[in-house]
Amino acid sequence: MTTEPAGERTRAQVLGAATAGLILGGLGGLAVGGSFNWPGAGWGALFGGLIFAFGEGVTDARRIPGTPKPLGWRIIASTAPAALLGWLLQALFGAGNLATYGAVVGVVFGAIGFRLTKIALGLAIGLLIGWVFQSNWPDTHAPAVAALVAMTYRLVVAFVYRGRPEQVSIMGEGVRPGELAYVVPFESRTRQVGSGYFEGLARDRGGTFLRNPDDAGIIGDFDSLAGPTFDPNDIHPLIREFYQHTTRFHLTIIPEWKLWIMPGFWLFKTVIARPLQQANLPFNTKEAQRGVVSYIDVITLEDHTDIDIRGWVRAFADSDEAIYVGIYTTFRHDDTGYVSVGFPLPNSNITVTLKPFNLPEGSFLLKTDTKHPFPGHYISGFDPNTHDLSVLKLNNFDEEIEVYLEDGELKTDHRFFLAGIKFLTLYYAIERAADHGRPDR
Image (tube, rainbow, N blue to C red):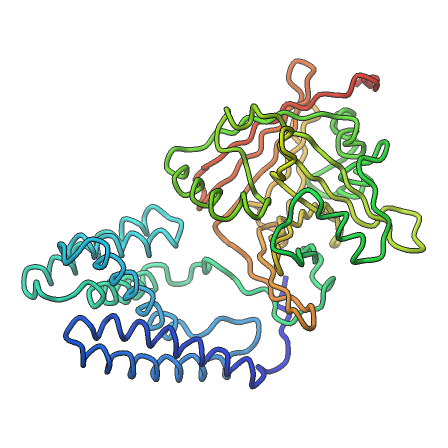
């Protein structure tokens, strides 16, 4: 899987990068300069703004589309947001102990790496630098210490983890929709996704929208997934029927969150997911007991007879507030079939591409954590003028979906991982509607 580069960076793009650098560097310089006195704050803002504007502009102009900026500049650039974090800590809690503030900054930067070892490394570096300043220069302000902690941490991590994959990979810039088979090229053109997304998409695309048509499924033909790791003929007929005729089934859900992720998810759900009505997963069993309704929405474009777009919407039964809005597609590369699910966001989306595997007794597994280059999680941004895509791959986020029968009942365990650590499992019980018979094995 190769990056899809665009042409050279335009003057407007370089100017935008320089402007962003001017603002971020100016604010960071203001925070660090204020550690000394007011004239120092002014000089810090001036020099920080000029240095960051120059650095962002030059590195953006010289950058080959589809590649990151030089590591050295990225390390330097991390000092500005760190200084602002230090300023925020000091504004909220006063002068405080510099070792404590250093530890907080180190943990925050370590957490960005999604590894416990990086969190521990950030904590150690933050404590050490903060303690040195607290012991020798206790009047130093938190922004200056925070900037030094961030730079030191990034330098140490660059050395310790040299040769390992980046947290995020740039897969393409200025790519036309459809050129990357593993990305579902649909976004939301409004601030909210919601359970009416597909009806609006049909209007925008000039297609015919239907909700829950008889026997519609999220996958048109299960045989399209055949490959070296997956033989559709070995799958239990009930699992095949569920994917090809999803409207015949009802689902219930029970979430199981790990305690360490719950505060962060609660904040994400409250501030982003619930207003957006996307990725609005139940926070606990009590919320899940509100009940879930499931819609299979399909769109047929003009002059077509087959379904062109298949969507699955799950919403809380008592309010129709969307939990999940996904667009399901399949594609083949060489001799292997894949499932890609796109989750529309305002002017962007997240696509999850999974590879299928057979399990014993007719069970089925979809997973992103494989050696093949296509499976994974991708974030796509859409240019509002050209509709071209810029695509990033998240390298430390994985999931797997296991579908199986237990005592004759269809079940699904949907597991999510950060850096190999499971943080959520969604347990689905899938029941056939009463007016459909059950096929025999």
